[in-house]
Image (cartoon, rainbow, N blue to C red; front, side, top):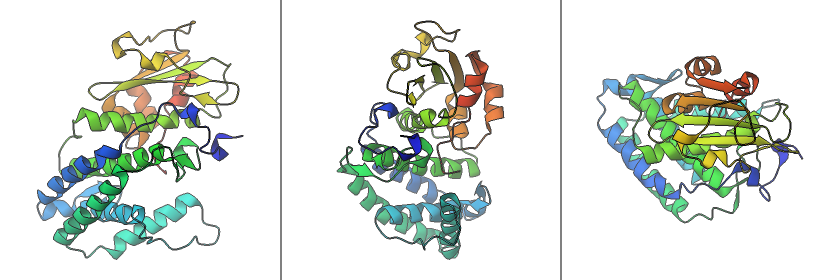
Length: 295
């Protein structure tokens, strides 16, 4: 069975479950605080590609409504891929709400975001949920679907912060959850990378909110479940040639670079230029192809 078609019955290769359910309320409050502090000019600043701050806020509202069951997407156009469909319908939603006032957007985000946070708070993490294409699992366990949704809310808020001249929110708990979720893409990223069984590729995110993850080549796929190295304290994580207790390849990056790479705020070559790499460079370069969004 390929990673692309694996079901939620056995997803141990994704590693330990993540519980992001309690994160949505604080994330919403942080978003609303940011939006309420904007000047009129801030709403027109470029935040993500060709989208403005206003566009990103409207897109987030569409995300909230979609998860609450208010489906605003039309069907697929003939020959349209999933990626093209999502980009098209997202853009249509943003254009539909282009004339919404900032005040009305904030009010709508507050109302829908509060309902969504309450819904997620009591969700069953073991239930079967929407697929997560960048992790190669469809359907996915609810814990991954919910954590993925949290990363989207967090990422769009950072885009708004950056647009108005603020740095990434330094809250380590939120960042740790985001990075842990993004790294669930590592086995899928390496799915076409050949290596002997037992080969390990380690990614270390250095800084507050950082961590360490190691994907191990098994007979069937790469897996995050096999690696004891990922549980070691960061200071003890080895960056050396492979041995019985060391990774075959290891990549050390700062936390800002890791989340920007996973969301394609920077490209893999730029991330590699910032990285400390030890061991098999081919494997390290493959790991730096990671992308944890629909791209």
